[in-house]
Length: 147
Image 1 (cartoon, rainbow, N blue to C red):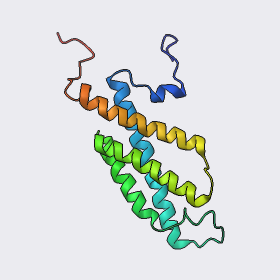
Image 2 (cartoon, rainbow, N blue to C red; image 1 turned 30 degrees about the vertical axis):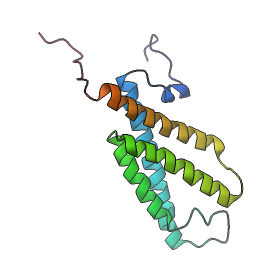
Image 3 (cartoon, rainbow, N blue to C red; image 1 turned 45 degrees about the vertical axis):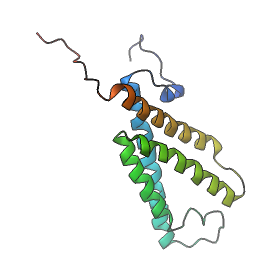
């Protein structure tokens, strides 16, 4: 580790300062969406196989989660391709899904995790907007000069 390199913190995940951090923000949001969609798919499949007497688990084991998983995975793939519309739809979908889930559960749960994921999605949205406004047409500069 280079002692002169700036120290990375959790807050650096949400900062966009140059082209690389812009691409990282988009990639991070897309990866989080892929993980979220994958978990929703697993829970949706489990809903076909498992019956639970616990009312708190029923919303998670609903086979209709496969539809939600498909939507999130599609949006994640499009975010990774730097789609502004998909990034915006991912943020809107996440907020609506959380509000509906919290309403069904009776109270908000996992608020800190929700805020971190929402910040990653919003940062990916900022990254896609900035990418198309500033970096899309920029040519990568070679790291070593040509002789």
